[in-house]
Image 1 (cartoon, rainbow over the protein chains, first blue to last red):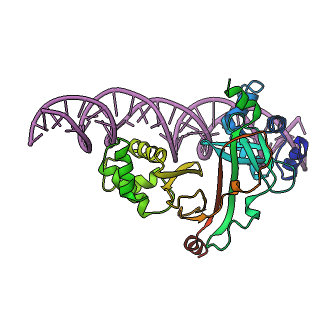
Image 2 (cartoon, rainbow over the protein chains, first blue to last red; image 1 turned 45 degrees about the vertical axis):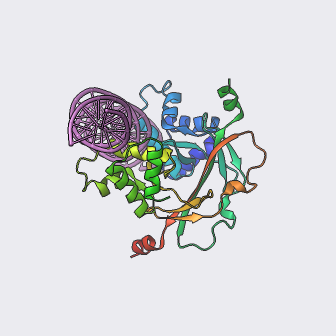
Image 3 (cartoon, helix red, strand yellow; image 1 turned 180 degrees about the vertical axis):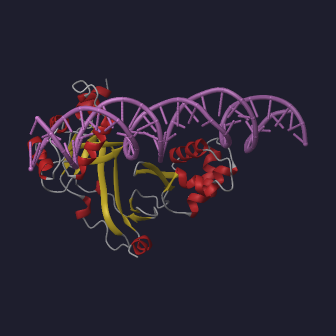
Length: 141
Length: 141
DNA sequence: GTGTTAAATCGTAATGATTCTTATTCGTGA
DNA sequence: TCACGAATAAGAATCATTACGATTTAACAC
């Protein structure tokens, strides 16, 4: 998935083309890491001086619904990143400082961790947190 | 860990015995599931008409610090449950309706999911979501 | 038991993230 | 170009959480 494919997906579903949507998607495409709403405002607020949180949040959840963005909740904030286009289900190592991610190839749900149970399973979350090389180097100075 | 052991732990660390702390711990002990701050207020608000959120949040994070309670973040809320006393590190199946949990014996971090990487790992989260037998029966009616 | 002191609590205000409302603007297809 | 519905701005409202000053209370020494 790239920006143009994502815009096509929007059009296909009957959503309108706007410069702001394009720029938001371009931002996520450039930075392959988790960003919060305020990060988006910070990045695009210069270009669109009147950009409102409402627009950002509305589009973020739209993109997430259409599976253009992946969503997670960290530190009391919703964070979003461009969907990985690897095709297979997987999880991430996430840098708690800059939001950069690295893929974990396997999903623990594939393993026989959970045998018999009385739960009707609807989802799961597996995330590994830490600091990437750059950020951990900076912190130790 | 039971309520009295938890109160002993508080005393040991120099914290005071209060009826509210005891009742909060008793609540978590009775209900072995995840509860949010508002659930605590709802349960104890009858007995203590002036119970303030400050007291609840302050004690919840104190208990969490002392590892009397386990903490997670779900649906934009902090949720707490009495610490499992099994001794070994493990994860949970969590009912999205009532908060009831069931242990998952193993932790995916023990497995060779993550080999070489450039991250300094500090933590992880593995949770499986769904509906327990009771709640899924009720929903389907 | 009484007094002292620091911790705990109350009541409420402040904060931060997110969502909602209403009026206005803009993209799209006729 | 026009009309229509979708998208947006601005700010108010909401929800969870934290902070603050004043008051109350547990613990301990006497």
